[in-house]
Image (cartoon, rainbow, N blue to C red; front, side, top):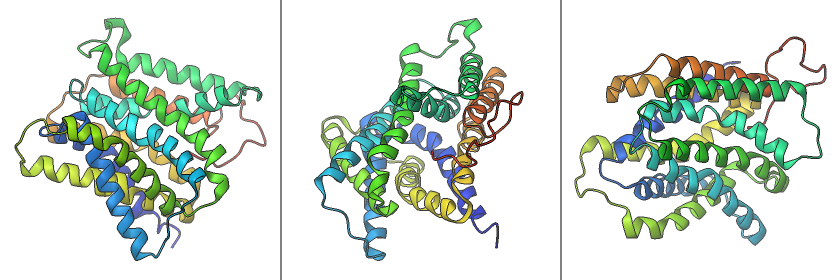
Length: 305
């Protein structure tokens, strides 16, 4: 079946899109440290179990653990805390939309890290379009509206961490050619250990455990930070990295729908319009679409995200 990857793709887009809803619900009884630790520890336990069932042994190479420690900081520790911190004041919808800036930050980070490589014109156009989209999302003509700048800044800092994690991973981690489940498991173990002191000191916000917030945290950790890695790799194997990375365009749509339906959040006209412009800019920068004939004949068809 040519579309056997579709169930995993839809599941991945749904879980990652709902993660902002899960974070918002989790904050009902956990602090930002608690949410970040909860999702990483549950994800780590899930992947450890999967690795055991698949008889996958974890590497003991200290160099690999060192590089994955850096990746855990960029992909799990800092963004996990920053997104939860931001959602104490901003909507899950805004968090989901700003998360769509990740592909743009990845392109920008790659250009900054590999400064010897001259950026392509199409990448610069894409970044410019994406920046305009961000301005529309934020409604700059009204300042930042009701969104506190500190918490909006936390979201962008989290996205920046995501952006730098991918070129770092390509340069220092992927050359080892390890099994993805092994990489993700070590990464989440590192993240959980780093976040543990913060959880022990200030992890519980309220000693009340309602069913919805608890289930949200279980979903965020087990599926959003655990099984999601398996789904993502499955899609890459069955459909290619271009299809797998396109889930970035699905998650903000799911985040908006979930925020409206389950949290009663309000959506202003500029947020979806700006999100579309951001995604359009990301597609240009990643050379997924042509723009005035700027796509090069030898542009790669697949992109690693």
